[in-house]
Length: 415
Image 1 (cartoon, rainbow, N blue to C red):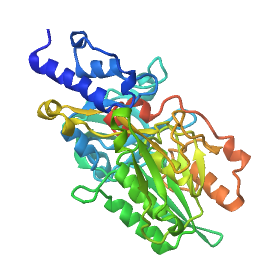
Image 2: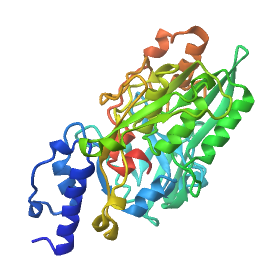
Image 3: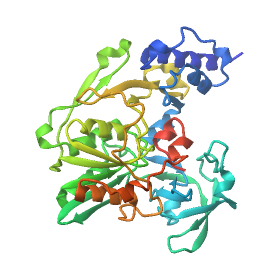
Image 4: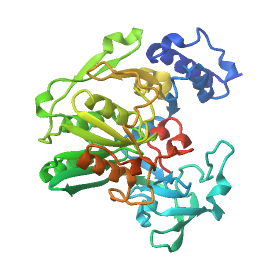
């Protein structure tokens, strides 16, 4: 028999879901709490499948820390090339891996003395057994560097502040200034009110000063994050002529329909573009897709890479609305709303299809013209198309980092 507190928390989860859950009418009428040994089992059992792949439970501290980039772990991501070699896909600057000098493009050949194929699972995925993200956990990695040499590094997990911007640069393309922005997750800067990102502000000022005429936004490993930061980006990228127009509409369940709201643009800065090219993959989700969907109503939007993940719905934490959850440090983050763009488009659970399907090139640094997706974007700006040679590079990875995570960590995937 569950203890009293356990039963109270499970009851609070079910009651909160009935009140706030976007698909509340699909919930069971009653629940036998004794059937579920954990809160996670309960949530999984009542979530509306298959559309809800997103609702999760965490702690209040973990939720708040993630949205301002307070992480723990080694601080890297990985991706596979077409021949299933595994590379560092990004490294956070202040993380243990970043401080040890790790870089995107390093091939990972061994983890804790075993080769990568030895970690392969029957479903085509991988379990590298790196342990939890708790500080103090140690793993050893062997890398093949771009110059052909190898190095073995032992790395200790620690707490660190993650960066969102992985690269910002300007290409000179036949006299045309083309901005390139590799953006890893929508994280706010702690302490700012209203919620904003200093990194976004600095990036947009950089591109504005450079006088860019085109922009490539690289979201290929961006699992989402703060809607407020997404709005900050949108307000920078929208044209002045569309300031004040509808950005998006929020839709809630029938009990909360009074909360439905429209958000309008408030132009920031002077960047003025007629189109934006996004580099995307299955790892591009949530707030990434929100930005793409919103801008699609006002600009020419071109997607290069792979189809996005498919998350047209959003969440906010429910502990502020339930004292039992709050007092027991249970953070319930279910799907609570859907977002429609100015054209009413709100249903993209299959993801946004790439206009030009081009394979990933994790072996090259950010913004490198040998990176097939970057090259394809530049090719498109020059010629209005992407060459068949590049399109022939397309492959569908069997396993992507986003597949390795659930809940809060799926939005901010890193090891």
